[in-house]
Image: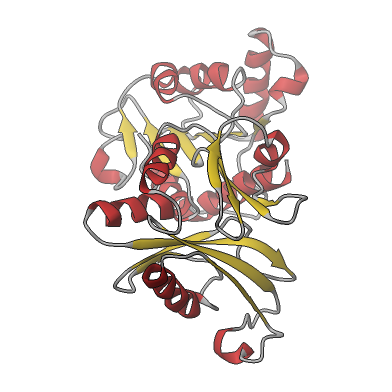
Length: 322
């Protein structure tokens, strides 16, 4: 079950609670804009907001425009940057420029049933693209096409200059085998970075839900638990037990999966033994090289939180530079 709540989910929750809402999406950026294309925030009819389109630079101005869009029942295409006459009031102090599309949910914008369909795709971890004309005149959800955009996880304006494609890849997910101290530090860090977290450990004393608030905890053997969870191309797997009885069944699944990151705790000697076991299991050198071991970037980390930082940094490096 996906525990990550984004702007579409929050918008739908507000709509179902009897409130009105508008989605604001970054459709283009230039220079050092602080958020990626596709970043979203949602604004309720009372001015409440969730999410971000600029890291705080222009959110206040976007909220006011969104409230107007709700009243007018029409989409708005906004542009902000340091060249604006009121740059200090609503400009981007960091020096970038962004365009933001504001769409009411309902009249004049995205139909509620389309929003519900989008949320259902996201909850089921199905990749879907939202195509919308920048003037708000047409929109649709598609599950075919845009293969290159999906591979790069990059929303953007099409070559026609009039159509924006917002990608909704399955939410990022982190599966951890071994409910140890490093895992306790890594889970909340990963959640802040946008990962759903699943912790697997058959030892109930370690894998106690109270030790991992907000994360899914499975007290089962790793092969069974990960077969249930699934290891797709939006999943990172981190093995923290350095116990072959627990790590190896997970590795056998992971090396046959499209998981974008596989990391395993242990010394160089431990990893060499791990590599030998994977060779005996029939994996070739290129496949085994997918395992990051010892896990994490070499930043001189010593404490469990520092090791967690190094692991998360390596995960993100692998995700964004692949």
